[in-house]
Image 1 (cartoon, rainbow, N blue to C red):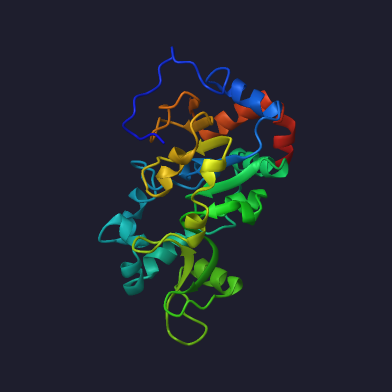
Image 2 (cartoon, rainbow, N blue to C red):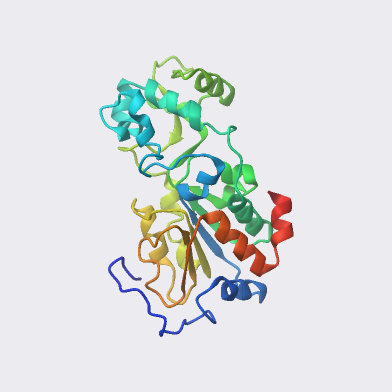
Amino acid sequence: MGNENSSIVGDDTPPQTLESRDLRSVAKLIKDGRIKRVVVMTGAGVSTAAGIPDFRSPDTGLYHNLARLNLPFAEAVFEIDYFKENPEPFYILAKELYPGKFYPTITHAFIALLAKKKLLRKLFTQNIDCLERRAGVPGELIVEAHGSFATQRCVECKTPYPDKEMLEHVEQGKAPHCIEGCGGLVKPDIVFFGEQLPSAFYDNRSVPATADLMLVLGTSLTVHPFASLPMMAMEGVPRVLFNKERVGDMGTRTDDVICLTDCDSGIRELAEELGWKDELESMW
């Protein structure tokens, strides 16, 4: 399946499936009807253009900007045990991140276009911003590996909490409590440190093995088990990375295409090669 320690494929090694390791060859496969099952993976890099900070970038990342909340350490805002003792910092942060403040990027629109064309097999996202949904990607095609703000429930009795009341609390930066009277705190269904990933992730974890094309967008591929998904693609299946640096084992297979650029720029180039530019712009 490959691993992160494998050597980078040299220019003198020919690809197995692609004519050449570039977006033009990827687009040709799609235009020739040879691609039917695209698996997409997205990380924070697809949403930074929407104005949402990523987590780990020095000086601009979300963790860097949490100093004002006087947390014992930055990640504590997403620690379940810390949340149960002190939920206010999370809700101050949630007010800044909550869906509705941000709009999908051209990359989100491209994923929705893949779905419209019946080419999207599954989208795996680390993001909790729901921008994929807002762009028009059907919910049944999305695996939110780290959960999302789409739903919320009591951390004690698991009773769902109404969306309207949740929004009111988030806008005030206040933590809601269970409507059933158990007194438990309510938390969005995003995965905190110390919690299991959603069952949907494990239920769909084998899907990349069925892909005939993988697009890896704006993720550092450092958080497991999400980071292992590209390795599950079969040998010879093109894997395309859109990111500002090479990550994971990307580049170690003969049909890997590495686009070291921001996601929107890379996606615009691919859309141009596909002849989808106008259709993509109309969906954005």
